[in-house]
Length: 175
Image (tube, rainbow, N blue to C red; front, top):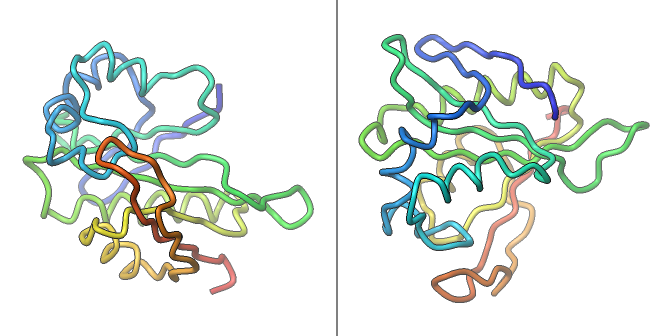
């Protein structure tokens, strides 16, 4: 298991995943509209969600953002990306989802900025993100964080709603 250090922002503590987080995230992950841009359909149970969150074969790390009152606000992840090596530095792919009743509060931006800063401090050379082209809020967030759209893959992912196009974004440490 990869170590997940605690990160802090002005409003949130980002800590490692623990049992019970699936309960807080389930209403969002079980909502058809909120799960629209996942490669799989909405979750049917908290157990199913926990199995996905805590899959032992996933090589990435998960942070759960909590506010000062202890309420879970979202899930942020970083996993190995394509093209990293020991000589030039690692590449990480990030992802995020904010609980639906807290969307629009700037949580994704604030916590993504903290995660990106942490990955740079770990020596990352590049950070990437893949996003469904129809996911306008995520596209806007990535572009506002300084990510560059590097590719548009047509009919790239087979999902529960059919084939979808994806944008591939990257941000270089040197930028």
